[in-house]
Image (cartoon, rainbow, N blue to C red; front, top):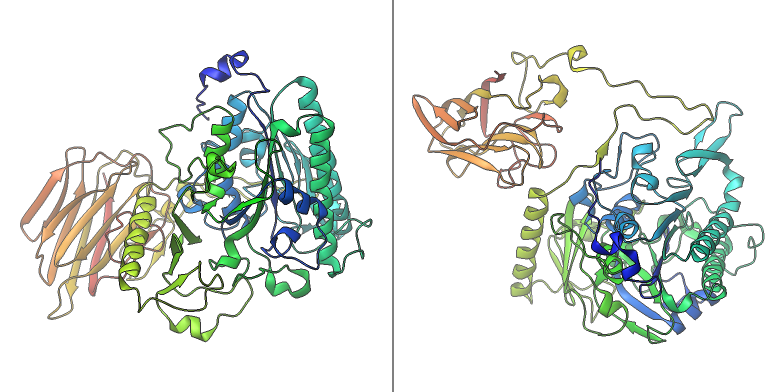
Length: 625
């Protein structure tokens, strides 16, 4: 259950009238490229309403998202880089995971401040009831809960269907051609919500994440065949029509001068789809990568009478900043006990200052940090793809770290690392710091045990996971280096003392280095490893703190007993023992895998080596008391 912080203003809404805080509208497009609309250079797609929005508002030319759908939406909703909240990639239909109901979303905050809240469109943060918008602060929801290529075949007629939901129920199973209605129906629902909120005299937060421009493309018949850019251009122009309907409704309702509208996209264009995908304009890369074309989005903010018309800024900001900015504009404050990555950029967004609100952005691909930007400098930490479905260039694969100056060359072609070693070193330190900090403070995604499919009309439940009693336990006599076991194959370790017994023989003449055993991850778990001629037993019991005990110079032949009890954390090698005060027993059973000689996911201890121990393992056993 969520525990909500109710602000003074939420308890006494008459203290701050709806006229003094703005309505907030967030238009979030799917897979739209940086060069797909007129204000950002498109000559093919006609976008008169977006042209008007930019002319009357402010262009943000260095506004960032994440490389793929769910990660980008998680950043928007939580104000956190996606790996921090356990959403590194994409959620799928009937999946067990989604945005954790314990996360405090932008809608949660605004609802507490008295706003009417509505989500219309593609949610894509889990389609199970526990993960839907109505469980994350939205009063209502209407839309397809994931990407429009994720439909499944209905047994009734053999055709592929897509669940169009209202709140927490499937209102209609759309066949593929039915998708031609969604942009129009989303727009109509959005306008109805604004009208109803206005009639009630309430401030409103409208989140309109369009299904467009995701492949497959389904423009309404009124737009099909009308553009100069094929089906893709047709749908861009329908999205532009939708923007116009929203702006016109705000003016008709006489609330335009009290409403901020933010238009942006979730990631770059799906360029590998050819004519069915968009373009990145001057940027290199596309959807699914951390090059600028994959994550820098065409962004416009509009608020007549408040934002000076026809302005623009290249200041650095992104989807993580929307939550704290909108909460600030609504007169609220972000909870101090919840770690987020976003900052309040309202003064810059409104044009009160042109100074960049932040100087640093971190580019995550999945849970891995691939690049860091500070000011004009961007350091690629590893090889980057050109986008989803595009083959990697050999030249990219051959290179290590690469440094680009985005001010002098936005297209990321010229590597300046050799000429600027001090800048490389500085950005590397920033990368190490953010990676360690997020690893130490990562929160899990939400999980349900028995997910339900939303199609066909009669939902079918996936078989429940086996109980712990039904799962075959680990056979320690048959284990070998490199094995990985589901965590459920160990008895429940929550609140119980345990010990690890291991016999390791290090290769002759070498100092011990590598992982012996790892179980769990950055929330709860333990790891036994060797590094720098030290044997280390680290435990994370459910807090950000990693407690460890270290045995120096353990030798080549190690008979190890590592133990955790309520009183102490200890390592014994041979007849000698080292101990420290216990951090406490594990608060819950570790969720991530039990790994022999390696760690396949998020490390318990960020300081642990990645590889397996450089020796043979003759005995290994975990005993739970």
